[in-house]
Amino acid sequence: MLAHPDPPSPRAWWKSAIVYQIYPTSFFDSNGDGIGDLNGIHAKLDYLKDLGVDVVWLSPIYCSPLADMGYDISDYRNIDPRYGTLEDWDNLLQGAHQRGMKLMMDLVVNHTSDEHEWFLQSKSGKDNPKRDWYIWRPGKQVDGKRLPPNNWKSVFQGSAWDYDENTKEYYLHLYVSKQPDLNWDNPDVRDAVWDVMRFWINRGCDGFRMDVINIISKVEGLPDAPVVDASQYYQSASMHFANGPRVHEYIKQMHAEVLSKHDLITVGETPFTHDASQLAAYVLPQNKELNMVFNFELMDLDSPDYSPLVRKAWTLAEFKDVIRRWQQFKRDEGYWNTVFIENHDHARSVSRFGNDSNEWRAISAKMLCILEVTLTGTLYIYQGQELGLKNFPRSWGLEEYKDVASQNYYNLVKVQRQKAEGKEDVDMSDLLDHFQQKARDHARTPMQWDSSPNGGFTTGEPWMRVNDDYANWNAAAQLQDPDSVYAFWKHAIEVRKQHDVLVYGSFELKLPEHQQVFAYTRVLGDSEAIVVMNFGVNEAEIDPARLGDLDGCLLILGNYGASRDDGGGRLNLRGYEGRVYLKQN
Image (cartoon, rainbow, N blue to C red; front, side):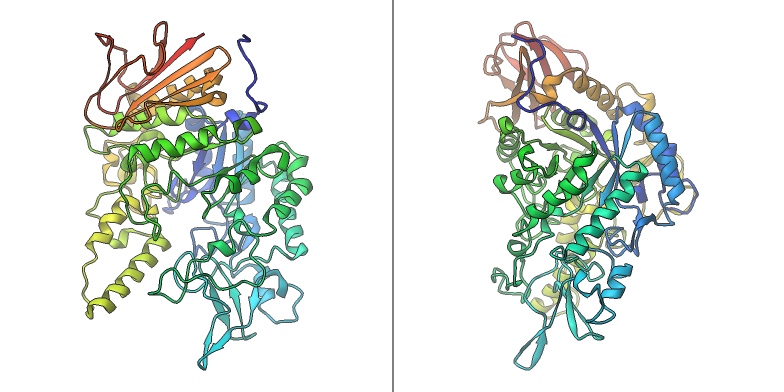
């Protein structure tokens, strides 16, 4: 058998790349104004290179009124002054390229800001040439009362429509009212988007993460959503806008006009979608659309249907099942996964899927690292994940939650309870319990660089409070400690890069019925990796024969340091222990 056989679909630089997501507001502040910036990112490029990062992905840095933390863009061709200038971006790009890293931008083109020049023109009058660049509809009269065109609910609560007094029509905004949706059915809008992409590619950008790209095509006629929650007039309507009728036509056109002409990394964000065949359509190579998409089935595992900000108990069986299905999904047809367990929209993984107590935090963060580096797909690390950063404590009050999603959901539930209980003063402590575990805010606390005030993130007043544990849990301390979470991530990335089987190999689940141990094998040609992880504090004993033959295997990665002998033909895994064995068949 060949020592280096090819996987079913060709290797590519973007498949084996390590991508590091930066949330610029919270990464590093170079000028003391309390807000992270581009020069701050430039100052940390050596830190990223040393970790093993290949691609730096920046969350939005364009001009924005910040109604939704920069995902409401008022000028696609300029940098928001809080982050710097276009020259600073050029300097950052050059610094990344000089170190052999690439730079990836966030493309947010389902909607703009209501302060974007396109929308200002669109709402100025029904006869404006850009009127049809957005989705305008007359309201409807019900029992003498003016209502929006349909009952769609915004993702951030309330109606998805806002009324414009000037032109006496409503515009659609699936997110906040300051984020009007673009009308992708208008070819002029599509051409304008292609021009924005070309602007950044010509400047040297190496790829795009595409925000909610699967909702750009809405169902014709914009019909009412079915009433699922009788307590509210406005209903979730994703069946009428997610993976809509012309979405693939538009992304194929984007590929033909722009993407196919360059060697880029492209990843789509595809919310409201767990159906594998729907996601496959964006990714399968013969479709000529995107390299990969973020699939949120694992991220949604601990959320009830009605809110991602509420915690639902999850089981390891469910966790294993989601990973197994996607690891094996259409591999022979070239489907390519994204491997991630954190991003700017989710709480910290060690708090969700590991154990963030003092005793187990580092060990379980390293175990989750083992999981991530041994799965097939492009690996995404979110800032601070490599340090094992955790959620901020329950003692923090509502005022520390800066995210519009947290604030809106809190207010919605509060009003519902006040109505139901007939009083102003209602108990909201249970919701804050959930927020402490699930809010997006936990990913957005400033990076903890050292033990100086505010974790070395800024010399000024930080835009958001730094987690209380920065004095002893920070990058500077971990860089000095060979046993730190950071040191482990750096080593684990090296191991992944040395062994193609971890990136491209087949996946077979072992011990599927075990309630505490997650085990699988990866095979590529004559290389076989055996991965075993204990998702609990108690020791777990397993029969090594059920993993295949461990004789002649080399332990290439483990979070308890040196290996130890397991006697009597049993394999004993300590709390949150993870091991990766390699053998050449």
